Length: 87
Image (cartoon, rainbow, N blue to C red; front, side, top):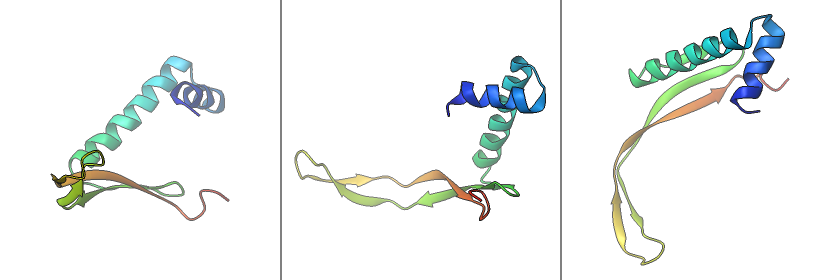
């Protein structure tokens, strides 16, 4: 399912117009992004939890040359689904 298909599903299940469904979905995504940028987790009961994890700096290898290179530390978004999401 892509974003436009998700908007269609939201519109059909909620009775909202596609324009309002788009605004609602965009607002949800922006809110989740804003919370993750502040390092806050977002927990949606019955769906899952979005959180931020930090990856440590490490050494890697360039696959073409075999040369060792440093990979910088960075923050990554994680999602942990709830136990009943696939039931």
